[in-house]
Image 1 (spheres, rainbow, N blue to C red):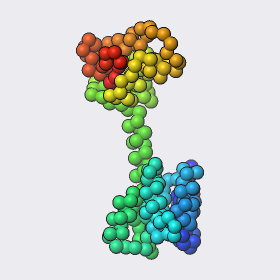
Image 2 (image 1 turned 45 degrees about the vertical axis):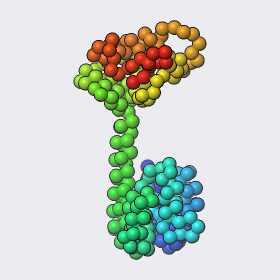
Image 3 (image 1 turned 120 degrees about the horizontal axis):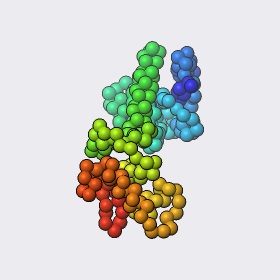
Image 4 (image 1 turned 90 degrees about the vertical axis):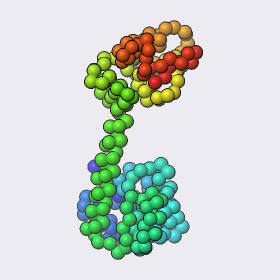
Length: 228
């Protein structure tokens, strides 16, 4: 699948030339002549990188960059005719990852683009891994493989025990009532007071706590519920 690169510049010739350079490297190219059009394209496409001109009529590049950074993390490289250090600092401070001064060398542009996409791809992969691994003290929970370890010890939990532990661990410090735990894990309305949750909590503690009577992970908040 080709990475999509968005070129944002009010100069049609620059959009055309830069597009040719990057298409020859195997990228899919999208183009916008102003900030408003760029934001519409970004909202409707999975963009791998944005090449963004600073000096544009209407919404300038700095404003576009800050708008993108409100909810997106793809790499942004500024293209600018301004070469002063202060301009570069202001550009990077607005959220850009790199800054190339016009006129630029085609090979340098391609190298910068590849570098930023490579860095972002590695960052995204590491971010996904970090989301699947929850570490609290010596307790490690892998939500992809549904494995639990205390130190190097493999802990075997039932599916519901794992779901309860994951719920508490993903929301560290938040107290969940037995009603909330039941509704989140079983996916049903809690309608009767029974010992289902307490039994599962007891079994989890027996498996992960060094002393189940003095738990360091799954804590009871009396009269309220449980938390990690």
